[in-house]
Image 1 (tube, rainbow, N blue to C red):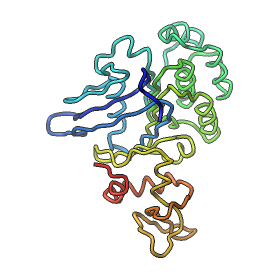
Image 2 (cartoon, rainbow, N blue to C red; image 1 turned 60 degrees about the horizontal axis):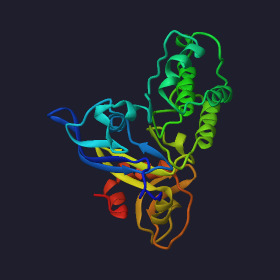
Image 3 (cartoon, helix red, strand yellow; image 1 turned 135 degrees about the vertical axis):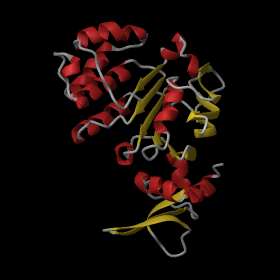
Length: 285
């Protein structure tokens, strides 16, 4: 865990209550703290509240009660110093009817650490043409330009909503490569998705939400210490299991400090279908 005795990037969500109206509360006094140097995977089914949570972090929607702060700045106020250290990529990406050169000239000035050379390098990796009108590109190409710009902005916080939507299989591989190359010890990266396999091997910490509640928030190392994944064996304390063409596989308590490869999809299903069992293992309220 990073030493935050001095100033460092932190996201603190405290007693956050949010709903679309008074009779439809999505989050009730939700608490969460995110630390730098990590890539967080925010997982949940469609409609679980992932987009609403990250939009609260970005200050695009406002809590009814409680707060969300980044480096002590409350998101809802969207002050210039707050906006300069955060980049948010929405699920649906649109671009104006301009060229890349004009787009950079207009928007890059808002980010003091923007690296134009890196931006063009990311476009090269993504195989995105540098000429032409941006609004005429396919959805997938627009998404790649948003991702390339966001990473070149070098903000302390990067939030992405369904970042792999619209990307084909080669582009997803390139996406994982670029994210790995842009890691920093003082940066928080959050990727919200329901496509669990797309983030496998990329994230450091897993947050699973369902029905407006945090079912699990833990680093992958802790998950590996507390859970076992794979074929069920006699005497195991099983939390969730499923039959597959290759046999029965399960998630169970790790009672013997045994190591097994983390199966993110299996963990996600365990949290959704047996949230009480996962909360009991990780002592989640």
